[in-house]
Length: 261
Image (cartoon, rainbow, N blue to C red):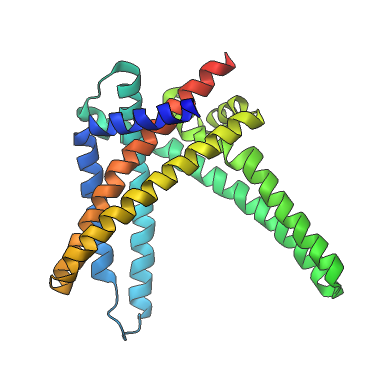
């Protein structure tokens, strides 16, 4: 538990000392939130096919651009943890340097998840026509078990792949193998899950507190201004906590990597 809390503390320390990077992420998130707000339909109005298409295109573009920001953030956070300083001038370079590899990594992991989901779906679909409650229950149990095992043994450990990719300057497959290799033990997987839980609880706590206060202020303002205020608050929280989490997981990755040596 102490190692988990050290990673979390380091995450907050890095974020607090990297306000320039945090500011860039806040601006990016705010731009995304404001554009999403402008595309939202008013209550009682139906969304047209053109609006739906526009929203889908924006979502795809936002995700693709997010990968650039992720690569830049990972590179700068790695520099800070390893060297005690970061140069914001390297933001664009890191974003471009790791873009294709992070995109490829994401696509491979999505493909693996799709395969597991397909297998589970086929197991249920094959037994459904039998109209046997017991057989169906067994099939559903097996499908769930496959999903749980795959998640615990593969998908959760694979979440460290981006950190291996950037920290070790590795390719897609090598970073995945590295991530799985250093997370072989159940104890390490449990620690990683615990880190996720701690960070999620902290995020929920901060989000609730800030959201409550901002909500009170927004309630006495015109609706449009209140929505912009809430979007701004959300962007600030996401920008700051985004670096907290990136740094915490980076510290955790370095720690478990050393344990393997």
